[in-house]
Amino acid sequence: MLSISAERVLIDGALRRATVHVYDGRIVGVTAEASEPTVALDAGTVLMPALVDTHVHLNEPGRAEWEGFDTGTKSAAKGGITTVVDMPLNCIPVTTSLAALETKLAAARAAKLWTDVGFWGGVVPGNTAELAPMITAGALGFKCFTCPSGIDEFPASTERDVLDAMRVLAPRGVPLLVHAELETEGPVLVGEASSYLRYLHSRPRAWEDAAVAMVIRSVRTTGCRAHIVHLSSSSALAQIRAAKAEGLPLTCETCPHYLVLCAEEIPDGATEYKCAPPIRERGNRELLWAGLADGTIDFVTSDHSPCTPALKLKESGDFAKAWGGIASVQLGLPNVWTAARARGVSIETVHRWLSSGPGRFVQGTAPRIAVGEPANLVAFRPDDESTIAASDLLFRHPLTPYLGRTVRGAVSATWLRGEPALDAPRGRLLLRPLTEPN
Image (cartoon, rainbow, N blue to C red; front, side, top):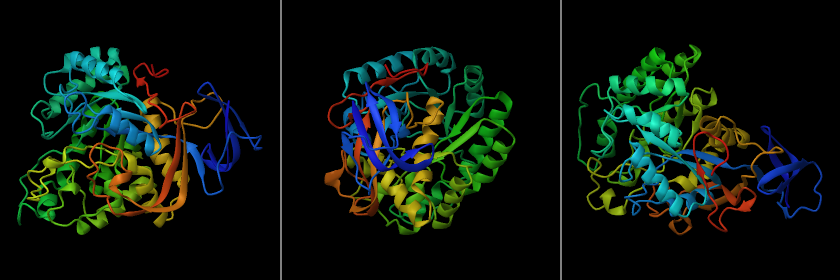
């Protein structure tokens, strides 16, 4: 029996004094009194349901030198996350067929998993017949790109491809996740290849807006659940808001880098900031915060997308040729909390964005501290202050734009099914149908 006592425990969206009792991986009691707890957290610590990150690139098998199950999930656990969902690229093979999914699952079963791990399959032109078998094998949903993905084996989907996939997924209640950028016109580029503003202008907000409009049309036609990943364009918010008001099954996410960073502060040549869609201007960032506050944006994910340092081309600083993606899975809670706190947002709300929202999206229910629930918990110290250092990061390559930033808040402990998450790799596979991780 494990009992964890704290002055501030997040229960049903509110903080109160409580002791959480755990047996055999589940919460068996929540009491107001601190009845000789095994772990007594001090008054500066908040005990919350652990976080869920539904957008992580673990890249294994095939590109484990970029990131892998061991380092990626261990870093996630260090950041208070107990469930991650892996994207269908940039592994080899990409997860766009039943055979590729089976290869992915075999690699995961053979690996060290420090968190539970689920899997998105991929939609590419011509693989519609693979989708139903992948659902049967456990895929939680599917991801497509409406622009080049960066690797030839995962090509962009047209509107017809999206419709074909949605017609398979809709009757099964399975979501289609969309990287929403659709090239509508060639941007006018000015400046050197190392100029961040040149890169920003190479992927304008109009591309996101056009892709979001296409997704909405497709949802209206098919009734399929759709989800816009890593939204960076604030000008897309109005049509997303209208689609939700219409009752369409559309959700969307944004990422810490769009909420914390801004284009005006990115130095030329600093390719560790490159991602797609790009980090946009300060005014755009504030409108994304407003979209989170009013519920247009449903939740926040890391889009942890690392690569080997050489692929970032730090010597030339060439934004056009450098690999795009930001490594950050361990850092979501302190980064978002620091920016949210400065805007008067509560820790309860931040938790909803990083845990309840993505948990409900992928599992149907939000993580809770309640009797019968898995004892997946995080202890967070919201007032602690620290500077992000490479030596503290557990993901494979500590190359991230957050190095040297001062943040508020620190994860002091994570429990996976009542066991300290970093003591041993105890993660399981989270497969459809969504019952217990197996």
